[in-house]
Length: 171
Image 1 (cartoon, one colour):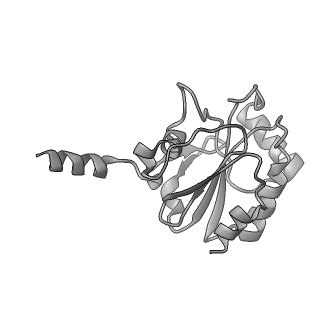
Image 2: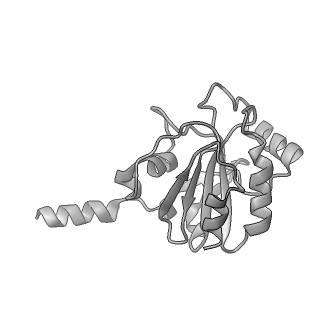
């Protein structure tokens, strides 16, 4: 009986591909469309010392993005109020200043009592099956493989063109 309950709990665990979120324009975005792609998930902010990483993220997307890789940006205002804007303001900022074309989602919370379910999955070993982590600041990156498995957590100070990320993409 305990084995059956354990198996049911494991099978009920959300996979990366079970998530459905809203993009920055308020349209539904189903993570199931990401099957077979490597995915870099990043929490963003427009008034942060790391905001210039948008340029490097866009370059990474232009070089590697397509059928096998994408970037998903999640604006978040969890660190010193560095993302105060509305979704519309954030979208305009990203396009005007950095020409962002990778998918941006609606603003969420990446930590605390109101942490979004995607970030609950990313930061909890009980959910992702790999490791626990905490989002330490804006522009922390989560690397997801082609099978929807968390493979690495990359600190905010590590730039998107770092070999830790590009090497993973070229594997």
